[in-house]
Structure formats: structure tokens, C-alpha cells
Length: 371
Image 1 (cartoon, helix red, strand yellow):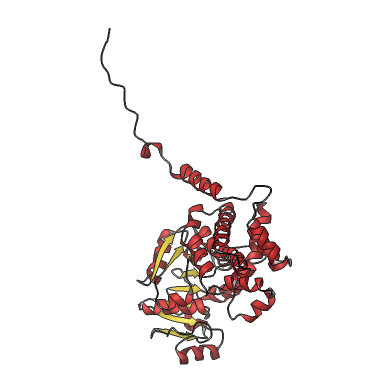
Image 2 (cartoon, rainbow, N blue to C red):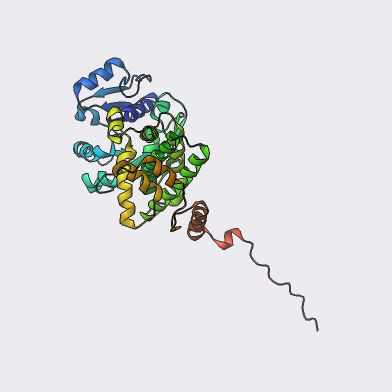
């Protein structure tokens, strides 16, 4: 019988534990201290981070990493991006050649700008690199844990490894698609949080659906520009881990990043908002990392830049919001028509075969000598 270890006992780690245990997987949820683990096991639910969904019989918590990792077929790291490096350092000594290593974090490392799969790879033996996977998609933890239909993506550089991870996690209520575009799946999940902060700011200031839709699609354009600059497939961003995730986090009342943006529009400071939340809003740190990556690459990313400046440079949110939907004077940002052309060009260059789509020219009919 399969067994999984989940590192991180907050809402998403707990939700994934519930999902796997429901389908018959033995799951150990690793908590940082015995008191927390005992509370989870006694209550049979995560009262602090995910109240409501009950633990299935095959899910239990432990503060022993050795116990959690013992005979585990895979380990899922559902931790904030800022703690991924320290967590994988603790896990690495328990890995073996067949261990699946799944990152369920949606953020970038501040300072380096690295994706979570890169952080993991730097901290583990090279022979385990092929087992690294990333999980991302339009997944609100509470809905998924309640058994409401959810769909996600697991990406690995080796399609067979992604398929193994799918077989571990996939169920009728939590359907998994696979991909080999690790870069795109990770950046889609991380960068959409930055755009969602901007959406929350607009909504908090009383703007309507028209402005919201415009910001979302222009924000998606910036995500595609930044993502493809660093090697992602642009088509990934119009799928589940890009557009899909952006839609759910921009409209769900349970979205942390949307909440932060909306509260900023009410006049609260970022520091006050973050300190009052039990959960981590990844978009706050990712905005800094994304802006730094854009600067490094020399890209024009006006929405990401405005969100960054509100969070880190004290730009007034009203001024930022009024500028977010303006067309930049330099005309360099990727607007919707350019975005479509960009995608079509990518398809044409990568996959277009004239003989496949166009009929072969007919040979002229030989009518013999007409003299």
C-alpha cells in the first residue's frame, strides 16, 4: 500500500493529506512540534488552518520526520516558499532513489528569484533531481479538502515521473493533469499571486468588473512575457496553472493574495495585514522577486512594477490603481492582440507543418499535344 509524507501542516498541506488519505494512501503529516501533532490527532481536523474537513482514518500527524518519511513513496512539500530551502535540508537525508519529491509551494525565493524546484535541486543529491515534481493549479484548499471537484497540474522534466506522481495523488474529486513544462507550471502559480494582489487593490477601491477583467488579461500578458523569457512554454500560462489559477484567486473570497490587495486599498499597511493573517500570502514576497527578475531581464512589466512599488516603496495605492490600466507611453508591454500573435507565432514555429494542413497542389492535367 502506498504511503506519502507531507511536510507542512497548514491549510494546503492538510488539504492534500485529506485528499490522499481518502483515496487509500497512508499519509503522515509532519508538524514542527509534538504539541501541534497531538492537537491534530486528537481533534481529527486542523482547527487552526483548515477547520471543518475531518481527517480520514489513514491520515495522522507526527512531529518525527523519521516517522513521517519511513517507507514513503513520495514527499510533498507544502510549505511557504521562504522556508522551502530549510525544509528540504531536513528532508534530504531520508530520500532514496525512488522517492518522489513534490513541491506544492507557489512562490519564488527572495534574493535569488529561484523557483522552488531549483531550490530543492540545489539542496539534494544530483541522483534525485529527476524525481522532482511541482504541483500547481486553481486549487482553493478548503474546497479541495471538502471533496469539491478540483483539477491540478503536476509537472516533471521526465513525463514518466510526472505520471508516477499523478498515480499517487489523482482521484475522482482531485483530478491531475501532467506536464513536462516545470518552469511554466511553477511560474504560472507564483506570478499569478502578484497579479491577484493588483486585482484586490482595484476591487478594494470600488472598480468594477470591466477594470478587473482588463487588469487580469494584461497581468497574464506580463506573466507570459516574464515566464517565456526564462524558458517556459507560453501555452502553459493559458492553462490551469496560469489563467485557471489567476481566475480562481481573483474571484474567490478565500484567496489570501486578493484579501491582502483589498485590505491595502482600505488604507491598512502591508505589515499590519500580514501580521494579522494565520496564513502566508505568497504574492507579497513574490512581487519583490518578480520585479527583480524583470529588472534583470530588462522587461517592461508595468503591473508587476506597480504592485511592487505599493508593497515596498510606499506608492499610494490609488495612484497605482489609476496607472495600472493606462497604456504605457513606450508601448512596450504585451497587450492582448500582441499576446495572441505571440502565441500563434509560437505555434507556427514549433508545430506548423504546411503539408499537414494544406492540400498538396494538384499536378497540371496532361492533355497531350494540342497542336
